[in-house]
Length: 191
Image 1: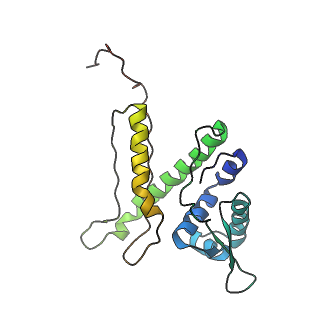
Image 2: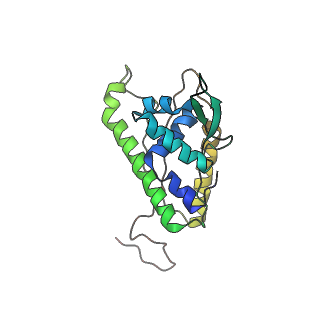
Image 3: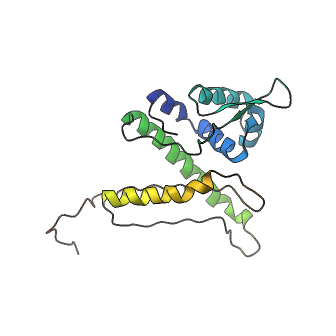
């Protein structure tokens, strides 16, 4: 789903709303009460934020729950990934990117801090992986690598977990290293 409208992008720039989208993507249709129990926040907060997400098409009504008073929410068909197009409002884009990075960093650090209690009998946690690399790429190569990475994840993002599977968080950021702009012909190597 492409998001270019500044107002819709602002609607996403709230950590609880991103948590709700992630939860509905993982569990399928759910009520505000269920979301609140899982996320540890009041039902009323979840209900408000789900309605705001629905206003911009990020979630939709999934029909009544166990009774007519319970409203269930779901992600619209085909909305497993959000993308902000290149021409989007720069200020709002930066705000949303910052919320996403802070949220993902917090989730990773929380996992690292608590992973000891989740280790299996061998002392390894097979679903946890961290990687870091510094690579030299042109802008075109960086774009190609990004497209390959997202294409690799796409079939997994579209499916529901079955027995023996876990929902895993994948987060990637390609950021330039300060002071290492493109090399020009004739530049001397610093030693």
